[in-house]
Image (cartoon, rainbow over all chains, first blue to last red; front, side):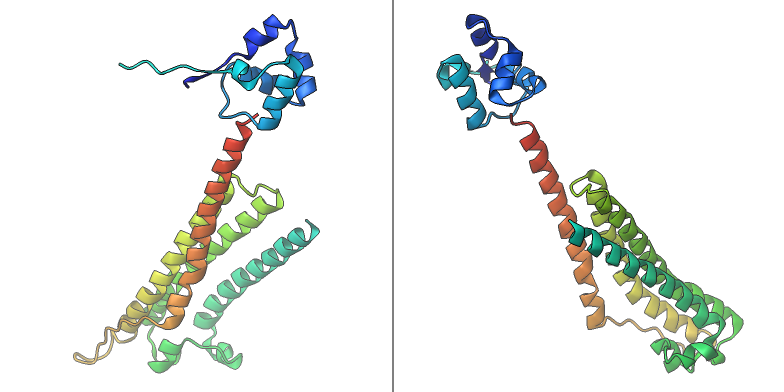
Length: 71
Length: 177
């Protein structure tokens, strides 16, 4: 997946616990963990907005596009 | 939800009645044809060829087995329908089991329609097997009711496909946080 979720970096930068963010966003810690590891197919705008609101960042800070390497 | 449960229960009762009627009618018709006539029911092809009374034992056994063919497929479809009602009662609307049941019901109902057509040919062949040379018959017939019977079969296949698509969408939604 060429989209990289940079949530773990932001969490570390803001010294926020996954548990607190999950509680604020209204999703389970398990789902937040899946999101952090990029093992989800998509993110709801509502989830994205809640994360940005809690971390005081922009969606662009959370997601990064990396061109896939050509063989 | 109460309405759905009631509908499923009603469907279950109808299916069980159909299963019992099909089994009883099959045995009653071949074992006690005289009393079967009493309830004004008969097999049109057998009546056309003189009725059960005109048949010898081999023809009767063959007739019983040939008429049993489509009924077995119909009964199997009904058993699958019963399984489907159980799946729906457990609220597993979009499970693999529900999809399998719908697709299987569709396939078996198509097999039923084909066997209804084939059984008529075989039955005429069996009924005229003792006739002198030149009087034996081979008949192939497809009626509009055969084609109408394809409608529930195709509907079951379409519903099965819809369940498959719905499950794929649900699974995809489950992967969105």
